[in-house]
Length: 321
Length: 303
Image (cartoon, rainbow over all chains, first blue to last red; front, side, top):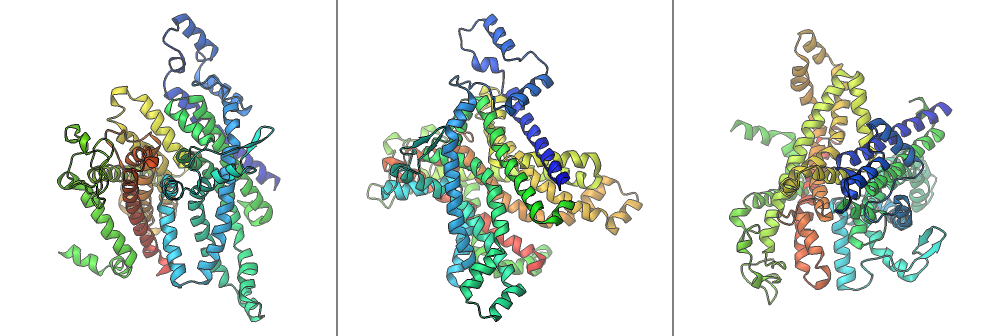
């Protein structure tokens, strides 16, 4: 057991080292940092000083090692664009993105699971078939299109919800939340729906497939024979056996959702990490880009490892691998 | 016409004629692609030619509105560009980039997957580790980073001209791992089968065994993945262009058109954004419906 956990963590660490290498390569490939940072009037001597200060005269391996050590301590350098600590910039926007992602995940579970159960138990009815068809459309719609359509209908035409910004926020130490003010909650509605739509269809399809399998099993037949009411069989006995893969997928997808939030954030002008990243991309602000890549991948790898270890704890058969 | 009657008798064709959604999707997709290919013949205007743009005809609503004017069926944008023409030409760019990136990622993924699966050992280990790393970064992030960095490496005068090539590269790099993994898994299964051992005994060169003997037996799952990935590639391209790191406004793809239209969302010029959005949805939905059908039709468990 311990061996498995250590192996899994070592594997994750290797992946993160490789991701850090990719992030480091971005610095190397995207042009000379001194040229990107320097302004017109800077003298050659100043440039050389800056080059020495940034450690650009050392060899590749030394620079990479320094990058990894700094990144592990949360030091991603200083933004080229506004001369602020990169970590501070990201930490400032982290709560906005996490709030959006967590609310979207919550919505997708609350809506997706019942829809999956219903499409499984009412198979063949016209409304479940059309739900199934709609789910393909839901998978096909890119999230920025969903966002634009939502703004067009609910903000421009109906004027029900605001289309940009985060509303008023309340600060708790370094965390800021919009959930406690009415304008914050109103601003959250449309982006959260736009981000959760894809997730809803995924969860619905997964629950449906799992339910169809479980409903065929003997214990469900036996429960029926015992005369337990239908809804109780479906929602208590059968559904419980489907939830494991749903929990796994939801946990693993949070990392992907953080990355996808950058599109939703751009559409809704949501002041999160994703919008910071897109602005960094337009200005070739490489420290911010590299830091974002490392942080998002870290969350992604961390959750995957956690899920794997949790599985091994629950199911001993998986430890052998 | 032997090939045609062969197609008619095949299982796939039978299942195709039984599936209403697959047939509708195929017809819609064929129409979209044909109108895109023949866009220069059909479109009322060449949207790339500034001489044909008429500022007096800008911001016209669609033809069914009172203020609409012939031949601007879907209205015009703020530059006087005919929306229908812009959409047809934009679809053309989107479809070409989609096909090119699926073809390139197939080429890369299939060859790497075959080599890794057939030879195993260090090559296999290295390739699959690299694949693991790529899979631990969300695909959209890879595509954004690759297209930004590669564009930055190009000389400034090539950045606009080369953007379609950069996009194809970015989408390929984020998509080849899936093919490589599928083919590798299948190749490992096939490698130990008797027909491969027989070919080896006959001293058939390894390359020939891989391409002529093993590859055809791995193609079924690849066909499904390629169809669904074509839809994904179009979406990724549209997303990158929407974010402003894809096709430049001078050669707008559907994503660029949506990006431009998005600026006029609150000024009542809804047609500038809505029609490109609908076209993109129609395109991707029909590709995905076909892919969904293909997956079920080729799945032996569901026969």
